[in-house]
Image (tube, rainbow over all chains, first blue to last red; front, side, top):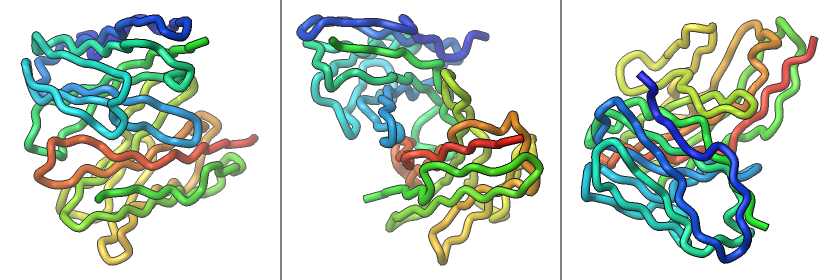
Length: 115
Length: 114
């Protein structure tokens, strides 16, 4: 059971480039989400999904795009990278929505630097 | 709107001393409360959570937290810390009936010194 798997772990981008951070979970979780972590800011929600075909915006969605074509995968796309998107990105999942007490499981993070 | 305040950004403490990491939240509805721990260069791991029932919840490694509704707090405590407890700790809240999204505090870095 791999849990939540993110790739790549480290990436350096030039300003204006696009890229996709991959996230996969093998726990048949309905709920998946992406957070970014910045020093002194905690984690902030970018986008989330409550099931295949359904996505919604979080607190800081600008500059990012997501899709959920399968239950297992939830990629995060940076459309035109900016230095302000330099951050650590975490993908997360949990068993179901509507029951907010479910434990959310996190991937190990993707370190992104935009130069 | 919900928010979470962790009052201390850094807490240095000597090994075997007690520690308290403070967390206050604001919400107009019922909430679920969580503490996550992040070791260096790793993801977040759930430490403990409060959903309902007993207001005192415990983790397997000696941490405990008490939900205090009147003070809107969920402080994390450990009576005797170890070097291995050095990490960043995040308090988070999820509103009842929501999609389950977590709102995080800004984190407290616990540094345990020998």
